[in-house]
Length: 308
Image 1: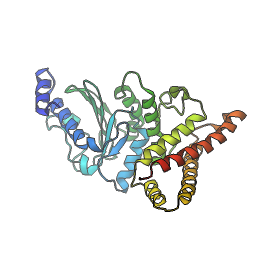
Image 2: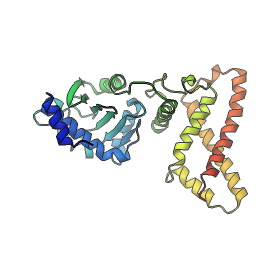
Image 3: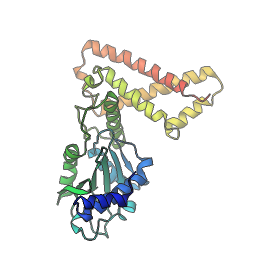
Image 4: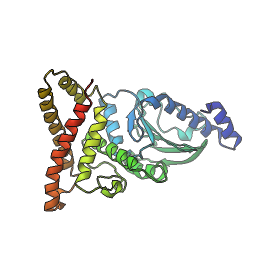
């Protein structure tokens, strides 16, 4: 990776404003620090969040909708308060130093990565977005009203930070899983989503149908959570794996798989993510069969994941 100092020098030699060049390089360096903890396509907090931080994070989760390979980190005041633009660029300062800052950094990959720095603190006097690429300040979005800022973020990020080019089926699947987990995390069904990129809304993206995509999503979410050994589900599975009786384990696998599928289906139904009233009689029958099949499949995955 090119050293930041060399990159900044090259940008300045190419005519970039030294202030924006240094600021972008500093923000990129910060993203590199958090990179091992980030999950592309998902907004991840940089630090543990207290109750007030969690409220702002959940508000951000509802509107920060990014494509599958964009890095995104949420910086609460403990981290964001230490990040200040160059003193010679006061126009980039969006909040008084005495106030708690809440910043979000996003980076779109590519030969020339694009970076966005958002200030969304309720105390910001100028909430908004700054966009950088190749050492240049591409543009800014300034808002006097925070609600207007939050309401505008989805459109701004889609225009400037989404990846261009063709998506693979795996991209659509990851995007849809990320969105569904945001629904579960925020407890809201009205969060930002691009239905043309979500296979739950557009089954043809993965060559499927309106019934099967529901269970594809459920199994995909389960697969991701199966990797989280310290999660409640991971701890519950560890208890099952510790059982000496194989038949008892099989029974518990089935019981837990049924509970998981029904919980996920409750999210789909409670937040009206799918209009079940539009299902034909045949689709309703297929839905029942697919529910049973998904339970068996998840139970089999639990068994396959058992330690040797």
